[in-house]
Length: 234
Ligand code: ADP
Ligand code: ADP
Image (cartoon, rainbow, N blue to C red; front, side, top):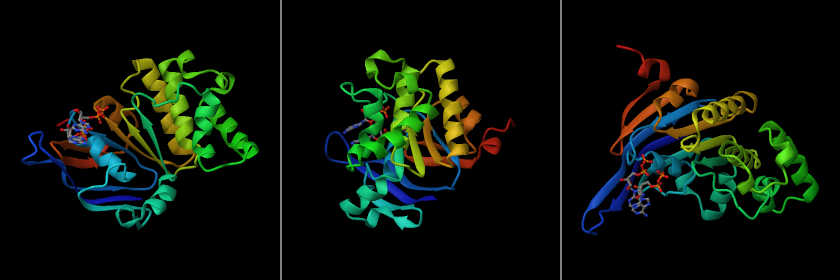
């Protein structure tokens, strides 16, 4: 489903003289239907790696193969189409404050000029799925953190992606809301068949819902495997 091959991301050091590797020769294989965890300290290179999957980062070296297609060889126009297969959710939700819940979820459809009735047919079931039907006309400022994240999830699903990327999606939420959000992601994986790739610094999150995991440190993968093996007590 997703093959990251020899991914290297270089940056200049802050003095401009040297080279710094946010990721160095990283190889990761993600299978269809996985809930794949990427864990590691802040600065380990997790976001950089995940942003390579939808080419928000173009890696300095390496290949990004999604569904058999090499995204690194694509033109910007081809990539735009391909990116619609990949939804993303964020720690700080990234909602538009001037738009209602409905209009936030509808945004990706609007961007490709979807007719209003088709948009409604898509958005209403998604609001139902995430339990926000009665909040459709509210603005983000009127919602709790957990509700905002559910808007983010519904928006990410509106273009019918096959893959959902999650960058610390539960890190700004309290434990109870985190639980509810994880259960929702599990349901989306199971019922809609989405492959989920999630970044987290919380081991418990991985243990709870991921089947596979990589542990990153300083730009390299230090461990990869089934969650039950990686976290098995010695
Ligand atoms: P993580 O998600 O694990 O916290 P990141 O992938 O965000 O790690 O960052 C990895 C390293 O790369 C960090 O040291 C960060 O400061 C650096 N970094 C990230 N983006 C850039 C950038 N655009 N320019 C320079 N350095 C960056
Ligand atoms: P997070 O994923 O934790 O929300 P970011 O992805 O914004 O945070 O950044 C992660 C790290 O990368 C931070 O330490 C930040 O300072 C660093 N970083 C991000 N963008 C750049 C950049 N353009 N230049 C240098 N460092 C960056």
